[in-house]
Length: 112
Image (cartoon, one colour):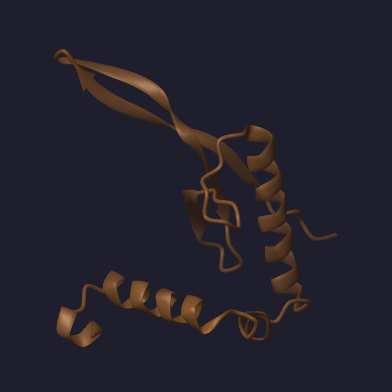
C-alpha cells in the first residue's frame, strides 16, 4: 500500500528588536512544509485561491489536505497539468511569465 504524503502546518517565529532587546513572537500567517513528487522539500506560506494569506489553523490544515491530495492525483496521472493550465486566462499566464523572468534577475530591457 502506498504511503500517504505528509506535511505540516505552522506559524513562523518572528524576532524583532524593541528598545534594544530581542522579542520573539509567532507570525500571523500559516506556512506549510511537505515533500513534493520529486522528493524535494517545499516550504511556503499558505494562500487561498483569492491570494489572501491564511490566519486560521483549521483552514490551513484543510488547504494542506487539498494540496497533498492534488499532489497524489498528479503523481497517479489523474490530473494533467497541461489540460488544467488551458483554463487559465491569458492575463494570469502573462503575469506568471513576467514573475518568472523577474525571478531570474534578467535585465529590464529583456523583460520588456
